Amino acid sequence: MQLRPVSVAGTVVLSLLLLISCTTTQAHNITRILAKHPELSTFNHYLTLTHLAAEINGKTTITVCAVENAAMNELLAKKPSIYTIKNILSLHVLLDYFGAKKLHQITNGTALAATMFQATGTAPGSSGFVNITDLKGGKVGFGAEDNDGILSSSFVKSVEEIPYNISVIQISKVLPSNVAEAPTPGPSQLNLTGIMSAHGCKVFAETLLASDAEKTYEDNLDGGLTVFCPEDEVFKAFLPKYKNLTAARKTALLEYHGVPVYQSLSTLKSNNGVMNTLATDGANKFDFTVQNDGEVVTLRTKITTAKITGTLLDEQPVAIFTIDKVLLPRELFKAEAPTSAPAPAPEEAADAPAAPKKKKKKAAPAPEDDDTDAPADSPDDSADVTADDDNGAVRFDGVRYVRAGLALLCVILLL
Image (tube, rainbow, N blue to C red; front, side):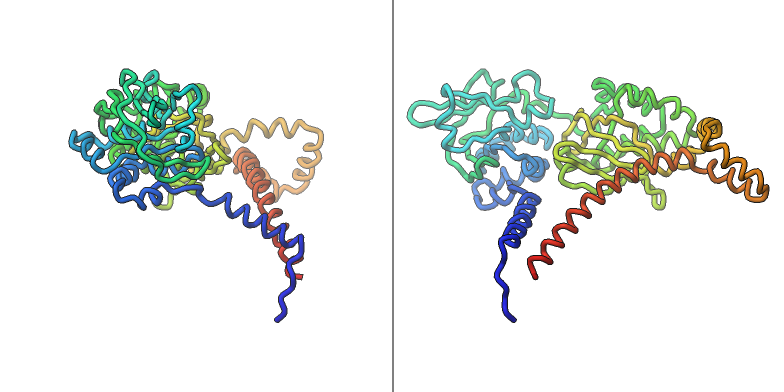
């Protein structure tokens, strides 16, 4: 078989395919990087145990300040909880790129770097920042900003650098910080509704407190829980519909906003797909689909699509996010849609185009019952679903056209 030379068009196609492939793969893996260095194995182990590794892998520009096993053992000797350890290690993850060269060429000789601990929102003031200073004799000092400006640690070496994606460096000691080292309550001690009420989800929190669903949330704290909390104005507007639900349906709706697994924001961005909820029970699916477009994460049911608008808490094993819409499960609202059907019907009958249709139905009495039942079953429901499906169709067709185009180009290449 004689191989044909690859055309210019073919070369372009192959290049595009390689580019697409490269952009869909993960840029770095902190666990694999540190696995090459046994002296950093304890630090690596706790990055995985606290789920910080997954969050680091989800960042595009980051610096990890690792410490050797002896330094980690000094920290562990104090017997901090796993939640406190996560705060301390979060302080060692800088939200900027600092390679060895940049460390020795810091503008004005000093820089204040934000950390992953600061990004959690649990570090007050400047306590989540790290001071980096270029010192005499080629040394670079590091110090937690809440440690009275003391540069307690220093740069040892560069472990691995992928400019300007991730820089892994080794520093001499764990950065001391009174805020990061403060005892962190375990999940069972968390006041879920208190956190929600204090950060713009008071209406949802009070509704949860008044229902049986609160116990379901509490029972899942230790094993892992992710809550999607509708903002106050959103849930307040929904309350009239909520009050019309039966007690069982109220509980199901509230449980539908919780997931029995801890999902950080970075995990939600990287693991799109169907997700079960606290309301899921065998054949009663009560699930929704997680999708992301860059940094924007949406939760898509058959009725609504809500967007994550903020993070109230993201600490293993509990995460609480605010959303801009109430999640409406198909299992509940498909049956309730007919209650609002009579409202649009008279308006449609008053329209000129609709009048002739009704006259035709009167001329044939037998099928008239069937016609009147059909719209009563699903007008509101079908309108919602159609809008939802149309959006899905647009996305699907876009992907289909891209695939078809690539397939056509490949055929041209083979010819």
